[in-house]
Length: 489
Image 1 (tube, rainbow, N blue to C red):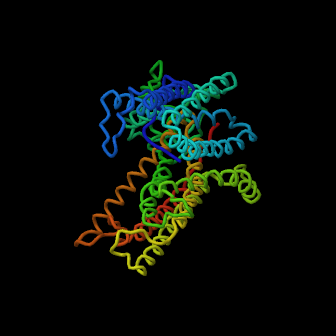
Image 2 (cartoon, one colour):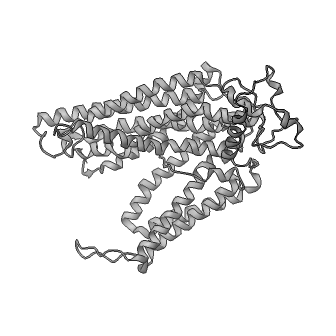
Image 3 (cartoon, rainbow, N blue to C red):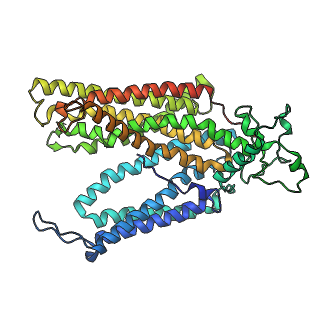
C-alpha cells in the first residue's frame, strides 16, 4: 500500500536532520488524528443527523475542524515517509558486511510493517468504525500513534545519527554553475588533478568521498582548478566544486532512467483502485451469504505483500545467494526487473479475466444490459496477488537502490524522489485512460471503457497496458545493463 506526494526531504539535509523531521512530523500527524477523533466524537463538531434520506449540510465549524485534521495528517505524512526508511537504514554500518546484509532485510520488513498496518486499518479498524462508531474508530489510531511516538523517543540514545550535509539541490546547482564558465576548458589527462579536499573525509558533512568516474565528463569541468582559483585564499563552491560533489550529480543523472522506468510500474499499480474495481462491479459479488464490495478485493494485494516478504527474505534470498554469491541474493536492479515482469503478468491476468467475462456476457445475452455477469469476483484474486508480489520486488528494490546508490548526504532526497514515481504513475495511468477513451469513441462507438462495460473492451485496455509495460521492461533492461554502481572511498 502506497501513497505519494511532495515531501520535506530537502529539510532533512539542510538545517534539520532526519530525526528532527520524524519527531516534528509525527507530532503533527498525531495532532491531526486527535482533531479527527474530536470531530467524530464531540456532538457540536459532528454534522446534523440525517432524517430519512434528507441529510442537512454540515456547518462551517464542522467542515473546518474536519479538514484541518485531514490536512495536518497529510502534512505529517510528507515528513515521515521519506525520512523513516532512510533513518532506519542509517542504523546499519555499510562498512560491516554483517550489518550490510541485515540492511537488505530491514527494507523488506519495513515494507511488511507498512502493509500489516494497512491490513489492520482496512479490516479491523473499518469493522470497529462500522459497528462502534467513527469516534472509537479514529481514537484507536490516535492512541497507536502516541505509543509509536513514545517508542521512537524512548530509543533515542541508541540511534546512530548522520550529520546533515546541507541542501542537495543547492549542491547540484553549484556544480552546473561552476561547470558552465569552464565549458571550453581542457580536462587534465590526470584526473587526480581535479579538485578534492585532502584527508579521508569529504568536504560535505555526513558523506564519504566518491571515486571519480569518466562518464558525463563535461561536469568534471566544475572541479578544474583554474588560475583564478589558485590565487584565491578560499574556494567558492559556486566556482569550484570537489570531485565528490560532481560525482553526486553524476549519480543522480545515472539513476534518472531507472527512476523513469518505474513510473509505468505504478501506472499498473494504479489499476488496483480504478479499473480493477470497475471490472469487479460487473462480476458476481456473492460468495455464499456474503456480498463482497469490489474495492475490498484490494486487500488481497496487501495480503500478497504480507505473504511474499517472508518468502523472499527467508527462502528466496538464501537460495539465490548460493547461485549469485551476493549477500542480498539479487542485486537491486535484478529484483526490480523481476517485479516489472510480475506487473506484466498481473495485466495479462486481468485481461484474461475480462475476456472470459465478456464471453459469458455474450452467451447470456447481456451485452446491451448494464448487468452483473454470472462469473465470480474471486477470479480477480490472481491479478491483485500478482500486483502485491510485484510490489515486493520492484517497490522495495527501488527503495533499497535509491538509498544504497544515492549519495550519502542525499539519501532522504533520493528516497523522496523514489516515492514520487507513485504519483507520476497515477498521472500516467489517467493520461493513458483519457487518450484511450477519446480515441476509441471516435465515430460514435461506445469505446473500450463505456459506462456499460459489457458493451466495451476493457480487456484491450489491459492488453495495451501490458504491452506498454513490456516495452518499459526492455528499456529498463537496457538501462540496468549500462548502470554503473557508485564507489565510495
